[in-house]
Length: 359
Ligand SMILES: [Ca+2]
Ligand SMILES: [Ca+2]
Ligand SMILES: [Ca+2]
Ligand SMILES: [Ca+2]
Image (tube, rainbow, N blue to C red; front, top):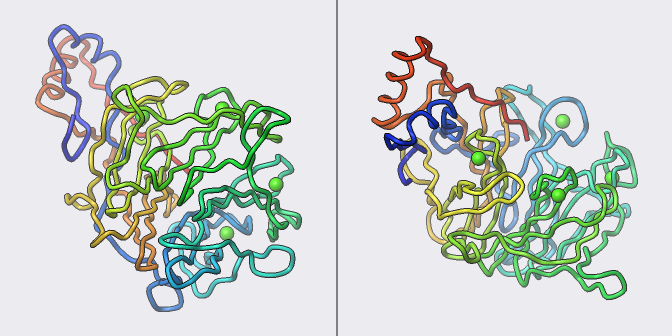
């Protein structure tokens, strides 16, 4: 299944089943690229940008978190742009650097990554924490030792892997791009980490949500072997993109593309079968050169439609706004036939409804 949108292809034998199941509709319908500005100019951080969205100060407005560094900037830091606009139309002026122990939080940037920050709730104390992927392949968690409304962090702890008593640093080699997701749907958060080696490393949490315990390294699978994101430097985001109840995977890479791996397994045991390029305004996203696309799927404007921000070598924050589809699914000819048949037999046409996604 390749093409601009996911389509459903129905064989005659599968028709009835497919109709009752009503295949999910494409949820990622992106408009043209724009650059996020702050204080009247386009944001351009030092080195490689790694943006994400979170309500940093709990005022109900999504804020912009951007990792910077790498290249000529070895002191990698986390910029926080507080939203001075509205939830529907974010506006930014300046930024502050995230703090650790009373000074700017710093990680060792090198090569094509400063650091890869994600706001998470790590230890269940109600205060948001920072997960930081490093260029050298390790992942640190910086626990918030201030308040949830005005976060500040401790000195950071390197995540560990292995059996109790024989744990070592969790290490994916180079260019760790971590995020937290409940990969196996057991109600306890897990860790997914991209890397220079193209793989999507999965670390199932065998502890609790508040005290994660990673014992075994695994890799996402595609077509029966390790999923390898083309051109390497996988930068995964995990989200149910098409609203079928199964988490999917969206990855950036060295080439600056954005690739969608649809889950052909189950939500609790995701597996994949290749990818489709994600398009914006009808053209596959492919940032110029080899800029290391590092995406985050978010709801930029609070309208329930998934948007995408991408960081890259230019230090900019590339924004692709999701275009509402008004609940009308994109369908193939078979899909149209299926719908007509449904109308004839049931007298009712049920449009698949989009599920709001908030990240
Ligand atoms: Ca905010
Ligand atoms: Ca915390
Ligand atoms: Ca889990
Ligand atoms: Ca899905």
